[in-house]
Length: 253
Image (cartoon, rainbow, N blue to C red; front, top):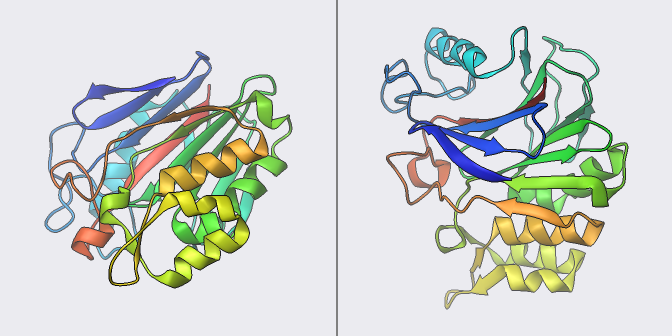
């Protein structure tokens, strides 16, 4: 699969199956209208960042046109943990989770990010999909391991897409983060670059790809667009502090 632009505002993922729809939003409005105002302009989809709720709901509602008819988006209350929600039917009682799995049609799984790494998974054989919010804390808490092991099929059947996130050059972390990962696996040292001040630059996509391959997922695509350095197109919490969120969405149709 590869990422293409359906327009300048959306990043569409071309999966190998016609039964899957997947895309990421940017901070740009697909319609060109500016619903969210500064500092959230133009297409914030998060309700928890003090944007006007009515504006956010308009933005969320507009996503329906890019999904199959009668599809409902299952949002998560992302808590930077390792809980995985299995979604059998849409619920307005938003689950506390940083990943979701479903084999049901017309349920879109949504992950919100603004520097963290969004990951989409599909098991072609079992017609099952997953979406993962992979910030450094969920990655350290084995969110990928928990998600893959809760899917029905073998990891070798899974295809993975790693979306836009903060680049290693922009993501400085402390020694505690470095040690957290290298205690998990010394090979993850390769995902960090030491700095003169005792801090490190962390590569989220490297860490995630390593963890996926270690589990047996070998078909992996990475979108190399970077949130922090592209202020025009992406929200970035590390850059701006008060900011909106993008959505990465996948569903079976």
